[in-house]
Amino acid sequence: MKYHLLTGATGLLGGYLLRDSLLAGLRMAVLVRANRAESARQRVESLLSRWERSGKYSLLRPVVLEGDLSQPDLGLEASDVRWVSEHCDSVIHNAASLSFHGSDREGEPWRSNLGGTRRVLDLCRRTGIRRYHHVSTAYVCGQRGGVIHENELDCSQQFGNDYEQSKFEAETLVRTSDFIDPPTVFRPAIIVGDSQTGYTTTYHGFYAPLKLAHTLVSRVLLGATGGDLLAAALGFVGKERKNFVPVDWVSAVMVHVLTHAEHHGKTYHLAPSRPVLVRRMAEVMHKAVESYSTPADQHDESICDGDWFERMFCEQMEVYREYWQDDPQFDLPNTTAAAPHLPCPDMDDAMMMRLMEFAIRSGFGRPRPRPIRPEFDVQRHLDNLLQARNQFLETPNGQTHLGLEVLGPGGGQWELMLEGTRAVAASEGVSPRCSATFRLDSGTYRQLAGRRMSVARAVEAGQVAIDGNGMPRHELAAALQSTVAANGTQS
Image (cartoon, rainbow, N blue to C red):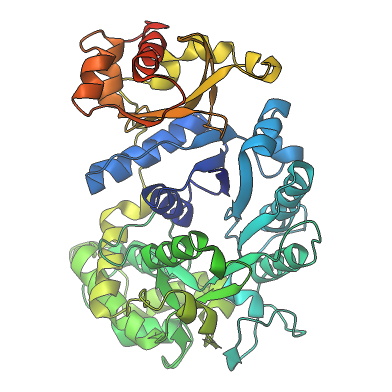
C-alpha cells in the first residue's frame, strides 16, 4: 500500500482528515511547515497526542515532510522529493488561506490558494503522481443564486471576495492539468466546529460576529445585545440562509470517498440539505453571549448603550458584508449517492450553542495550547540507523527490508535494512519491498529499548504483531531485537 500525501494537516479540517484517514487504515504522509514554537514533526505529534487523549485510542504517526507551499518543490529537500516519488501515489491537497481580501496577487489568499495549488501540481508532474484529490469550496460559484450543481464551475460568475476567486482559479487549474487522472474535487460549504463537542481551531466566518459581539459586550449592560439587534446590525432582515457544515461530518464523507475508489474522479458538494437562517443564528448568538460572555458592570463609568453596540458592530462587520448575503442552494447528487449513510447533521439551536460555548470558553483560540512532547521518541532512538539511510539508495537487490510501525506518542513508521538479522540502516516510511512488518505501541517499544522485556516475550504476549513471513520467526525476532538495541540514547 502506497502513501497519500496530505497538505494542510495542522489546520482544522486537515487535523480531522489526518485522524480519520489513520483510523481508516490509510498510509499517510503530511507536508507541514515548522513554526516558531515547534518543528514540523513536533506539530504533528502535538496534534495527534491531543486526539489520542480525547479519543482514548492510539494512532500511527504519518511520515512528516517539512516543507512550505510557497516554495519551489514545496520547500522539500531533493531526498524528500525522491521519497515522494517512490512512496506516494496520491495527493490530498487541503491547505488553503482563508483570507477574504488581498492587497495584490502576490500575497494571500492568492499565494496559498492558487500558487500553492500550482506547486502541488508541479510536484505531481515531477513525481508521476496521477491520483489527485482537491479541497475546493462550494463558493467557487461566486455570487450566483438559485441552485448550484456539482458539475458546474465556470458560469461567468462574479465573486464577492478574493478568497472565492482564488479558489475558483485553483480548481480551474486542477481541472485543466493533463498529467493527472480526472480529479476528485470536494467543495465544502462554511465549515464550523465539531457537531458533538463544538471543538474548533479556527474562528472565521460563523465565528466572526460572535467574537466581535463577545468583545463589545464587555462595554454594555446585560440585555443590550438582543437577537433582533444583532440581525439588524448585520444589515439583513434575517431570512437569509447560510450553509454551515460541521467539520467532523465533512471529514467523514471525504475519507469515505477516499477509501472507495469507485467514487473518485467526481465533484462533491459538502453542504447541508437545510441551511440556517441568519436571524436564527443571531438569536442563538444573543443567548450565547449573555450566557458565557462577561457584560459591563452597572457601576462602570465607561458603560455604553445598545446604539453604541450596534454602530460598532456594524462598522467592524462591514468587511464581511458579502459573506452574510443569502446563500444559494447547493445540489448534492454525487454526495448523496456516495455516502447515503452519512447525512449532514442539522445545525439546530443546540448545536449552534455548543459551537458558540466552545469558542467563548476557549478564548477563541487564545492562548494557544502548549506543545505535547512524548516521554519517549522512537525517531530519536533510531537516530543512528536513520543517519545511515543513504545506504538505502545504493542497496543491491537481495538485501532484506522490514517495516516497523509504532503507534502512540513518539511513534512512527520506518523501513529497516538488514545485514543478516542485524539492522544497519533505517528510513522513514514502509515500502512494498518490506517482506514483513512489526506492529507495536510506543510503550512496548520503550520497554524493549530499556531491556525490560525481550522481543520473544513481547511477541508471545501479543504486544508485537508480525505481518509477513519473509524470514523465519526467530530471525525476525532477532532483527527487531537488534533494532531496539542499536541505539541506547533513551530509556
